[in-house]
Amino acid sequence: MAFVNGRQITNSFVITEEIISKWKSEKEGDIVIKLDFEKAYDNVDLGFLDDALTCIGFGAKWRGWIRECVYTTLMSVLVNGSPTAQFGFNRGLRQGDPLSPFLFNIVVEGLGYILQKTTYMDLFLGENFGGNRILVSHLQFMDDTIIFVKPNVESIHNVKQILRCFELVSGLKVNFGKSYVVQVGKKVDQETIGLRFFPINYLGFPLGARPNSKAFWSPVVERILHRLTHWKRKYGLDGRDLLWKGSGLASASFFAKVVASLFKQGSRSETILKEGMSAVVGDGFKIRLWEVTCSDSITLRESFPRIFALSKVKDGVLSDFGDWVGSSLSWNIPLQRYVFGWEHQQWCCFCSFIQNIKVCPNFMDVLAWSFNPNGSFTVESFRKAWEERIGANLGLVSFCWQGISPPKLEIFVWQLLKGRVMVSQVLHWFGVTINSNSMCLPCNDDKESINHLFLHCRWVSVLSRTGMGWWGVQACAFKSMEEWAEV
Image (cartoon, rainbow, N blue to C red; front, side, top):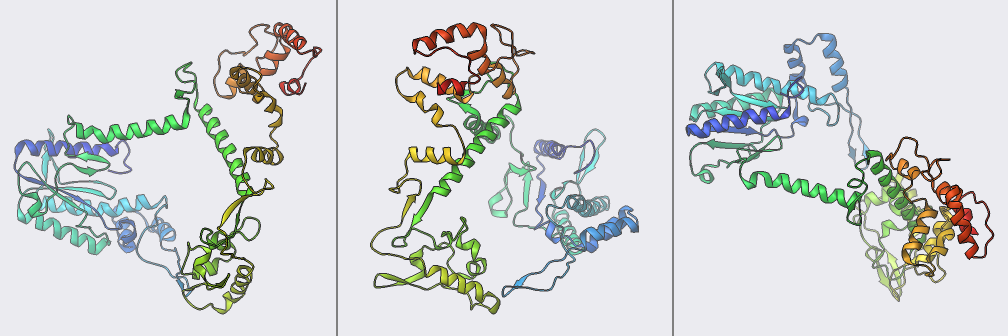
């Protein structure tokens, strides 16, 4: 039923659930078999695929195109570090290829045809379903297959023989260890004879469960609660939903910009931290050898990939790669095999580099902060490094936090200088539109921006001149809040 116009994935589940409900009321002990194919895509026989395309009616030219897409794949393997000659293969569809799901659907269509044919031959009996008494022997959705069997030994034996024959011609082997056999409508010792209990998972839904039970809806509730927690942590601010409850006008672009801004600032901070943090080698019990940087923040693992691949110890610290001789470490790199001739130059460069690493047993390995003369990390040194490298005007707003004004006023001034006061211009950037023209409400002379509302509006200018007079500063026109702050 996959890739059929007008059909959904839930159709198979609903039909199966209806048949099981009918069988439960009849209590005849009918059997449901859910199949699991072992490495489904990897085991498809390409010769059978070509035969299936021929039977469906595809012409030679079309099948030639399919063969060019599927059969021409080449691969090679590494033997003793060297790649072998490329070779093709006659089995398996590539995962991730957009053509593979459709080709696999054609392959499993062969199983559906065999099951339908054998049902008409009375080799096993399905279920007459619906008002028109349609015979339903099986349901398929890609590699998910359910077979409905009447409770007799001959039918079950015939189904197993059919699956075995299909395996021989198509390569799709049924994994009986992961397949389910469930008897409906009778109480039997299921653990003794190896049957499964309802509910079972089918197409992501609990098949055979009672919809009015708490256990049926518990996974759904838990999944929703998990997503709500994630959304609150990602988009919430101080326990409040951003702009959702207030205006109801928030758009997806607002959240996209918020997430992008947070990611951008976090990436910049991480860059400065990586640049400023450096490891000082001591006794070698904390620093991993392959994470030691050579130059330009390139690790030994990246600089010497062949030596890293040959090393027996991938995550070892410096002290794991040698023996102490007095107060010095004698290097000993355990390798899986001898170094080949074409790897000798990289091995010599690696040995030359590690000889310059001085390991001292008298003190421990420590992290040093290069932006501070004493090597310790401080917020002030990080702020200065940010200002020098990112160009952020952090010094401009530092005067806000002098403690001479109430905290609410300091926060408000800081938001003004950072452009975070929610005027119409900022709300429009967040994707929220209050009115069509976004004009300044007091004067209606210009659009409502931070600079206009707090500096250029004629109604606010009166208050601004009065406030500047309190500080003994002559009133003048400012172009921006940054220029006002410098005064």
